[in-house]
Image 1: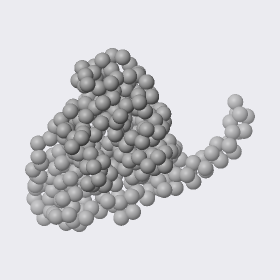
Image 2: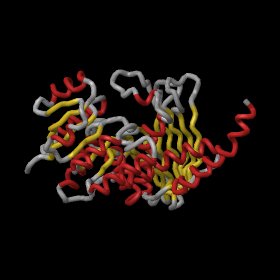
Image 3: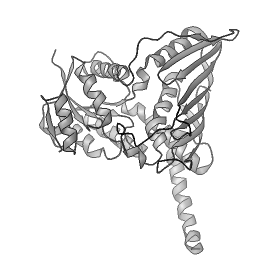
Image 4: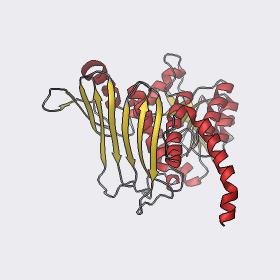
Length: 357
């Protein structure tokens, strides 16, 4: 079987994982490497000497390929996606698809108009702990009813192996990290959010330009409620994580972002640990995601993590931002209404602001 030919765009930190994952998949190969920085291209060519490297995005339309894999920052992807659509190439994009719902929706529409598959790399769906959690709901503890999700981290954005753009982006925790958590909630609870009451803030010691901490109360259409706290700037270097879900017959407790899954029935005195398969962080989940994407490209499975589905997770992020600004709960489905209301409020208050100056 001829391998899928991939053009990898963006050769920074995340691309290092993708180059290995593609190398270990016999159904894929990399034929193109694109990055504006020569040292990044040189480093990538050392791993993929058979590929063609360029700093010019036009390489997307010049190579015989099947897929464009975007390991680029979410801002400024329009030309990348335009060229992929022009060339008729499927798109697998790192999350989030864009740094605004409006731009992401435009990209989804572009891909649908061009008839090209668009998938977003929501690799946390493919974690063994995520898949086993679904099994616990189905076979052991019953349907979920409410939960608490805490993610506490002092994320050193200056680490050499980290992308640097989050340091200066708007709402970095929400767009870069909470997007995973919100997507996991939708995926695991099998429902869409109908209310987000959020607050974003930045502590005095934060190295990030904009708010790196988030708290929110989220309600889903099936009645599940979640208390969420996500911190990129806690003030302790030791990370903390717990996702506890209360279900009809007991609880499910995940004590690590990538594992440590437990459950208990109502009358149990202790938690029961769930045995999970061996897992290499950032590798196994990406492998499973790529396998699912390849199967879709071969026509043997549905496309995973579609761009249109991803919009629902992005709307949760945007709803949290709007809620924090307005001080009230927001239904992600009503974002357009809230945007119009904010524009009207700004227009009406402008003369008062000028007078006070």
